[in-house]
Amino acid sequence: MARKLNNDRALRIAAAAKQEFAKRGFAGARVERIARAAGVNKQLLFYYFQSKRGLFQAAVRRAMAELEAALGSSAQLSGRPLDRLRQLLTTLYEFLELHPELVALLAHAERPDGTPLAPPIRRIVVLLAEGQGLGMVRDDIDPHVAAAQALILMLGYLRLEPVIAASAPPLAADEPALRERWRRAAVDLVVNGVRSS
Image 1: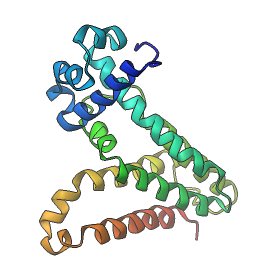
Image 2 (image 1 turned 45 degrees about the vertical axis):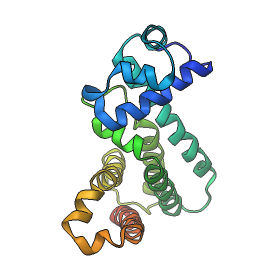
Image 3 (image 1 turned 180 degrees about the horizontal axis):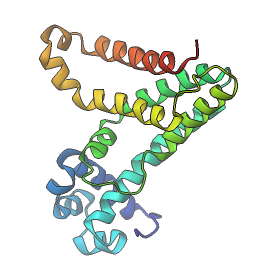
């Protein structure tokens, strides 16, 4: 368990770790590079985080706390459950788009380290369950599965976007518009897929 991150050095270490793990994955990341980038020695790094695994978990937790803060503003959304779901999914996608290191961190995770995606999944589940209670969301939808699928759709696209663009060269020239079209289509697919008829 990492010690409390309450000083500048620990925060610098966590920020350097996030970049290193996002770039190289858990196996490829080197504690020496993280210490060097943070301007500290390895012993201090281990004082705060105990192990490379502890450092990775701290990097993911920090990134997810940023995501949770961004989604917190969407908690005040008004409207019907499906309107709020659309707004929440849009906020989530936009945050992930602006934070590719979080997408990379999650893609590089070699084994589950806690449940980093639990907070956004929980928010989506609540909206889906509320929609079911009001008859707006299909009763045959499992809110937990649908929430996980929504996240996979977003994370998968953002992680594989270079491959998708390379597979269809005309799309690569239109990358910002492609990303925007994908976001709208992904949100529409989820919202329309759960909507009761």
